[in-house]
Length: 158
Image 1 (cartoon, helix red, strand yellow):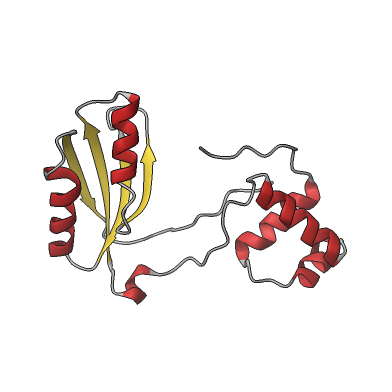
Image 2 (tube, rainbow, N blue to C red; image 1 turned 180 degrees about the vertical axis):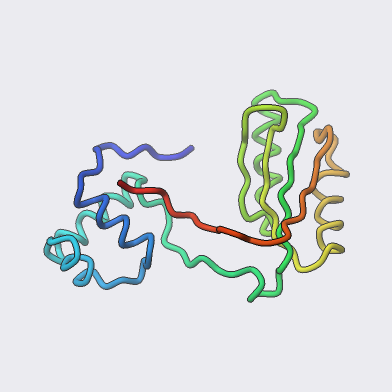
């Protein structure tokens, strides 16, 4: 369950987040200079935003091609049963390393996945494991990405 920020983010928080989204290795002193706060104040604000869920992770965005996984596939998944217990099981089953992103969605589909794999054979193996052998998958549709035009995890800020 996602954590909801307890206090609203002010202009300083948003400026810090904007800087961190561009490069989360930026020195606190540099962020402080950019947003006109002391290093200690920046550090306190970042810690508070991590604790209240405004910052959910500090991570590097990795190019899948550089790691030998050049194929990105979008997968629309339709469940046979959508009782809460069944959905919780499916959510857990979809949380395998090859699934880069998994969204529980409205509309005709129940889930949308972003999958990265090294070969189509690897995707076939994954599809067998996740979809064909799963009695709660009614059907699924795969869309192979031809070009990663824009990839970002940035949240638009102000």
